[in-house]
Image: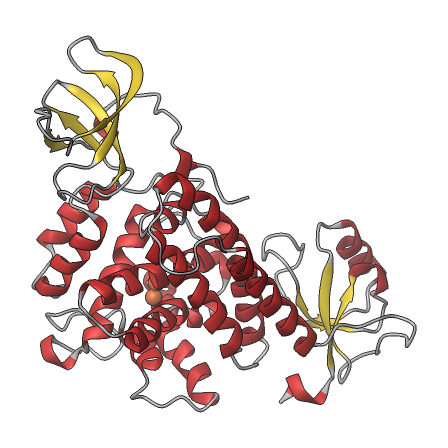
Amino acid sequence: MRETDGLLKKIGVEDLKLGMYIAEFCGSWMEHPFWRTSFLLSNPKDLERIQSSSIQALWIDCSKGLDVDHSVKAVTQADEHARVSSQLRAVAETDPHPHQQQVSMEEELLLAKKTLVLSRSAMAEMFAEARMGNAVNMTVADNIVEQISRSIDRNPHALISLCRLKKVDEYTYMHSLAVSGMMMALARELAFDEGQIREAGLAGLLHDLGKAFIPLDILNKPGKLTDQEFTIIKSHPEQGTAVLHAQGMKDDSAIVDVCLHHHEKMDGSGYPANLNGDQISTLARMGAVCDVYDAITSNRPYKAGWDPAISLHKMMSWTGHHFDPVIFQAFVKTLGIYPIGSLVRLSSERLAIVEEQSQASLLKPIVKAFYSIRQSCAITPIVIDLSRPGYEESIIQREDPGDWDLERIKMPWQSPPV
Ligand SMILES: [Fe+2]
Ligand SMILES: [Fe+2]
């Protein structure tokens, strides 16, 4: 493997020279000026373009081009794995609530942001290595799942809400982190044991690994895909599975199962194997629910995601033919009937956003009222715990934000984790 023969080296962009073979650019996929990510650097203009771009570092393949000068310190992939793992461990060590103590949404939002920033860059490294033909570093994957698991245990809603906001170039990483978190929350609801919960988290984290091989212009296309583009996208479960097989994972592994079958549907109309009903494992059915929910609720630069409560309502109508109804019910229990971020109408004819779930009732979350429907105007936002004993106001219905011409108040989870 290339990883162990030491021919791939990470260098700073200032040390790049003509004659080196570029294997991969580090950092965001959108930052570098080339569609090809691996090529022999022979044109001085290309060198100039790379050094004037926002890219800081890159991998070179010394078996195909010039090596670095001995005076330049190259970082091996093993060093890189160790760096990511120790960063993730550092977050764990500063974790003020390591023993599953429940905390408020507000407190967990701060902790979850830290976890997401580190996990997102670790995921970017993992995908870059998959593209280079290298194995997934399972130590790093385990570390990420450990951190997500802690966040979900402290408050299951913070990390999931933060993941809704996705920039184009990090979409798949944030989606993978969200699906991992949802899989663990759902596994807990379904009374899985601790080992199975971790397995569900890992399977969620790696379910879209095959997207590392899908061209970005197709993956990030805002409009409708052509049939040919859709066929390419549909290859990702098999491409991801091939990576996992290559590192020795078998078909009976939970990770392989979810990677290969998260797009199957209960009526047999999914892909890649057109499995139906009982042919689809519980974990793959869970993967299908978490995957679709995160995809449709995601806010992207060019398009607002669907409202969370509206999304659950629509997904409810797809149970039976797309989703397993029992698993879907458990999923709704983990998020609440009105998940955080949902727009609702109160009995007082006010519009409110769901801010936090209450332990007392899925129907009575903590909301922030901010608009009077009767007066058609914004009001001073007020936080209301609908589950407070004796409090009579209630949610009348979910509302589609698209039906309201509102300057939405800024909610804490609407700012990206940097
Ligand atoms: Fe997928
Ligand atoms: Fe997915």
